[in-house]
Image (cartoon, rainbow, N blue to C red; front, side, top):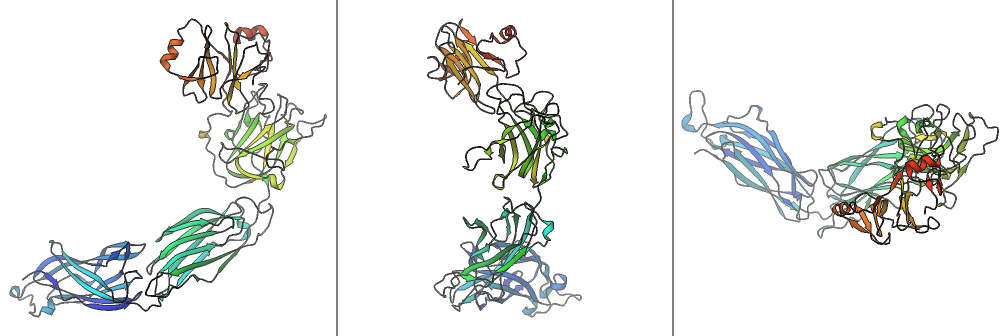
Length: 626
């Protein structure tokens, strides 16, 4: 009769962590088929009770014709809990067994049934699973599957032995890249490779594994660990410096490897110009064995401390590239500029000088020149010059703002940590346009940022600036100018409208450079003013024979209507606006840009903007605005 079968199951015994071998014999009767052998171990709660190490053939009966060399080919394996192999499948290849009646002069099979057998030896390791208690039977399943679809299964057993003294023993390696102190500076990364595994003599899994990397205050983490074969959580000590990497469990078969990137002095704590900053980083490991009723608790186990020593240099501050052109034109922007003195003209010595547009209040004393370095940059000082055509127009007083992202801005402050610090230059009467004014920041004033702004607090509207920034740039990657759409900050136009029936004047304009538009009204011909609702972005129109005011919201998402001269406001639908626009008293506001109107006559101003100059500053703002 054709087909296949296994001999009776066997039982062996093994202690936790011990590797044992199981003999399995398959009987393959008259057949011509291709077979696969699969060995599987049980799994509970996501962890194996035993792991499969290998499967090999020890004997093939003489009646069986099969693959040359009798070597199994591994085709697949399945894992649980990091690295525990629970299934191995091998290709046995084509197997032919002619029955006794089919013998020929070329093939003389024996009628001894042992010659129809294949003996396998299966190597498994007993894990430190909670179900592996004294005397427990772990079933090892062996399945022989033919390509024709036939399948035969046998079970063997390993009886678990527990000594009660099982203990894990972890070893680890922490290797730091080697370098000389002059090869690394603040902001550079140092790669550290970590490997953890249980020794061959360990008799228990390791739990609550914690790797402690005791970094000093000036060493940071550049990149989270890239962990293989185990899950790791990274925790930074607060407020103490250092790193803790936690791994829940390491099994007998795990080899946990990962790398971390430490960053040298990312916040520039070490004084610039330091040589061979000697640094010591101790590393140790703690862990414990699983708490079980059938064994003594191990408590926390400590390894020896590995000590890593290295040094690095800190840089000397240098010019950051405005004068040389390393900082591109697109990296220099401003609140405004007076043509041809564009933002990119504000380069020390080589430029003609940046000049802001003459726009009057609230802009005089708050115009700024900005530099985007493209990446984190440590700033230690500035060099300033006047424009190249006026030695006296240099920005004689200024504040400094900085930002990591271009949205949240911070000031260099006075000792109170709140008041923006005002830097002043002493410009002599006989100053030369080639004079350079040096500003060195105090240690506590230095900062790391991508963006910096020099904000003129000079009350003069006609100032000029040529600039160089001193410090240390962290990277030198190419800057992408395609992301820059304008070299000046966008600014809405100012506007006003007068209700010809009531005499109410409504005015809107910028509160400051980069500030919101604010709107005010006056019912007494400009003698006194009251602010309108903060949600108003601009006045669109009034209806003169009513108390209606039409406005647009700050985000330009909707129209607003007030029916009581600006006291309360409601959203105005587009169809309602269209209806109001048909009323005979509908009067739109007059808009005009912030510009230099010093050369305009009263008649020209009246003809273009509807104002005769009375109550109007020729630098572009209305008096009395709140």
